[in-house]
Image (cartoon, rainbow, N blue to C red; front, side):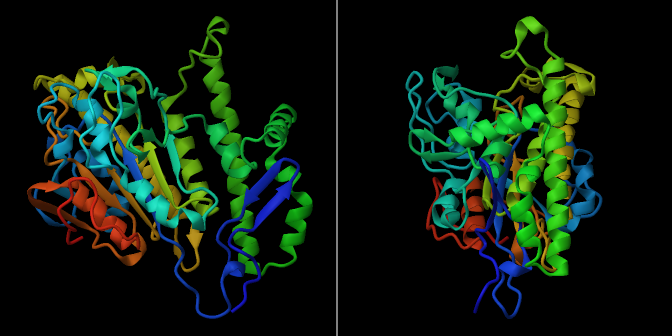
Length: 438
């Protein structure tokens, strides 16, 4: 069977190589196949206010609890799982440091080494997936975040800062560090990377207020003549999304700089957090739409983050408030922060749902895991973890339910199960004991 276009086709210009979205012209002649499966892990720190998280009873999802209310439109592509435990986030004789252990073990199921800032962990679920399917795309995986963090020094009771700043790990001592700057992500994905010519072209475009599409005009016109009506419509939508992404990044950067005194630039910048979350979600959706990667992680904030939320009327730091001591006001503030994070998860799901792929959409072909590796931030417990699995999973998930697994069921069992459904061959992950009926 023949293809009109390769899945690896790109549009080229000076210092630019922009990937194309999934098009019918890339399919072999004959029956239309399913779009490729995607896997995303989204992490929120410091645990949850659990009274507003869990549904009242197991079974099919009805009206969602307060914290999850924004996910109601996606109820049929959502499952809520209870009973999952991350034993390797517990002290197990290593003393304090629950936040570092929480982020480090969420996708690895491995107890992080505690040796005065030394590093010793394991490969994370996303990187196991990336190793097996990453060769099919331009980038093996994508790591995004909204809060910088270092990979050296100590950040939590003797644990390396790398633990609380990363959830993606390529090896025992190698975190797959996240990128928090939207323009750098865009340049890497859609402007030919970070080599000198690409950087020069990017700087020129920014200075002259040009779009990346202005540099691809000739290649666009040649491609346009080869496409059918459906693909032309899809490509028009894609180009519109790229232009909108550039506009959003420009606005983000302007507000980013405008919020800082001249004497503080460029290091001490405090951007609009909600805008930052959305622009990174948009980039993730565009990356999957262009099929430049099929595996991603997204840390909404570092574990132990003490970010304040003035947009919610909350002046105190997230981590400090999470130690609520059962004070009603603080519990309400934690619930509001949790709800804010879930609303941005809903935003991401909405972006995925908008992107059409064949007879379906990007959300249908994706599996998106959202959660925290701390249950209640006040207790610092690591059992009955708040965990969501969203998306259609390419039709391989039993969605629309709230299910509790037996106590002490390893969280790694969920990751192992999802990897299997994605076609990744792996027999064990961290402290996993088997797969789950999901």
